[in-house]
Amino acid sequence: MNRKFTIWHSIILGLMFVLIPANAAYSLKQLERRPLAPDFSLTDLEGRLHRLYGLRGKVVLINFWATWCPPCRAEMPSLQRAWDRLKDEDFEMLAVAVNENERAISSFLLSLSPRPTFTVLLDEHMDSSRLWPLKALPATFVLDKQGRVVYIMHGAMEWDSPDIINRIQKLVKESD
Image 1 (cartoon, one colour):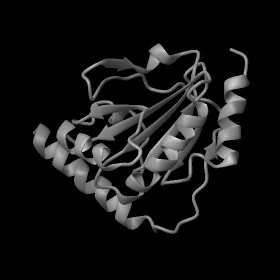
Image 2 (tube, rainbow, N blue to C red):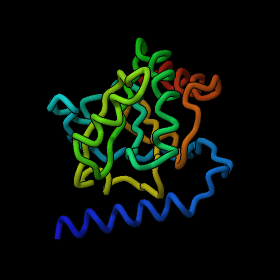
Image 3 (cartoon, rainbow, N blue to C red):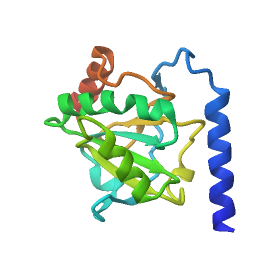
Image 4 (cartoon, rainbow, N blue to C red):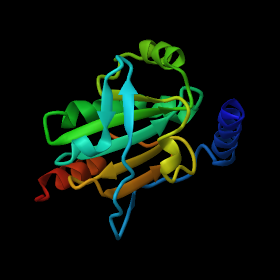
């Protein structure tokens, strides 16, 4: 059953990606109310466990992605540039690889130049991803310091644009 479920989710996510036009005008959606983000505990490529609630006190960008997703692959360099700009602030970036094994993820990351230095987490069976409102991949959520969702983005974007960097820096400056 677990394998069927995994294959079914792969097919659905793939269809959602195909049905969304590549040139659609995407924008970062700001939520009026800030719902608490679902907690998760996932391991990184080195086997270290990371718990989302352990990052309270920092602004967190969570990007759900897959190696088979062209927009996900395309936005990786801009995520790295954003991380390079923000890593010295009260900010954390998590890239959650959805429904893929460690070998496929490692192989893809090794092909990138520069290689990502932000945290990449494994959600091979989508146990954590299912808790989030993923409509398509990539899907990105920006949380405030209290762990509440402030921004949502379905689709790829340039994460190092001045507008996005400014929005994140404003969240970092918000008092706890």
